[in-house]
Amino acid sequence: MSIGAVWLKEFSQLKEGLQLSDGKILHVYKKRVFEGTRFETAAMQASFVIVQPASNIEPAYDLKPTTSYKAATAQLTGLGLKKGQIDGKDRAIFETASPGNKIEWNLR
Image (cartoon, rainbow, N blue to C red; front, side, top):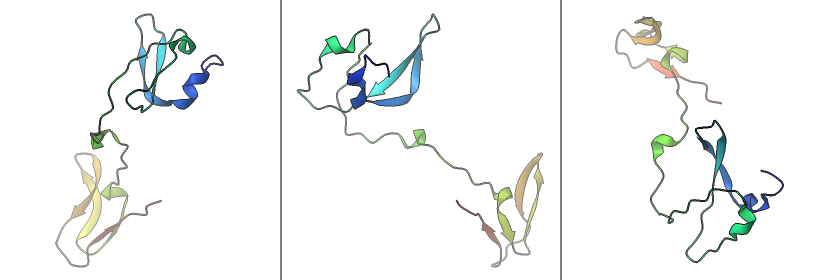
């Protein structure tokens, strides 16, 4: 945020940005506002402002960060489990079904 962009302190910067054809990158910010909210555009100087009505739709869950826990990195317990490779990738292999088979991850 530049010194002249004091009005941006009320906005949150998104991870996404816009790259112009000349290579310049524009940062994208957001702020939830309600009907009747007014902005003083003179303070925004050379900014590009887009407005969209607020929505109560939940955000897409697939856009949220996820953590993957691979079975091959887990602790395997039981006579029917072993670590091995399938198609060149590390895997947990279930050889036989057994009530004593367990896969455990250390979540931190």
